[in-house]
Image (tube, rainbow, N blue to C red; front, side, top):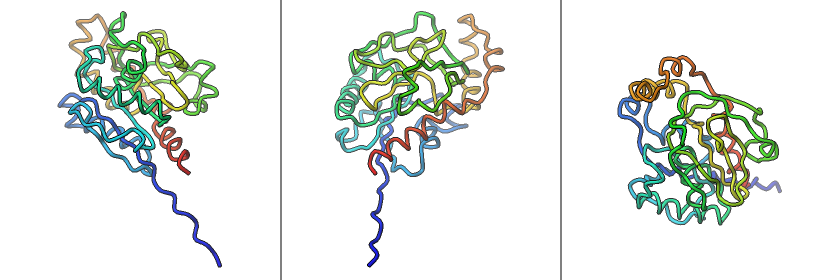
Length: 248
């Protein structure tokens, strides 16, 4: 008698939303959580929790994976909601729940685990820029199939100034020494934005243009330099597969 194959459930992933984008960009492209939903696999069961509004979704162990978005907020301000989210993430890392922190999420993850986040001494990094992977990335579960260098979309004024003890540095560039790291077996932070399309990056630069000019940056050149970043964007489906494979 033939037995039915066991049903494989969808992995449960929560997206911690830590802020919202500029109104004009939101009107055209949606908000941060929607960009991640477009990039993550349809095979996941995804819930969005508004961490900025104080929502923390139960225990980290309730989830198979956690994604933390970017934010216009600053980790170094140590807002109550942010510190609470950081403590929640630290529990997730301790329980070896896969985590992907992006931009603010990257900085919050480092801060929560004993590193330091704050304003980059060189000011703002924005636009499409190259990321260089270090040899440690070649054996990393999330990064090992990526090329040694690839373009990525970036926009940030704060950075991870000091990695947590025991963190493995995976990526950098000339401006930002901590573009990607892993802490524990399955928690990653990336300063760049895998959820950004080139159209979203261009829209950011257009909104930022007056500030960029005041800061001595060439806004027109940065806009002209925007290009697709498929290798960086591939981190979202890669993370999706990693999470799903862990529950098989």
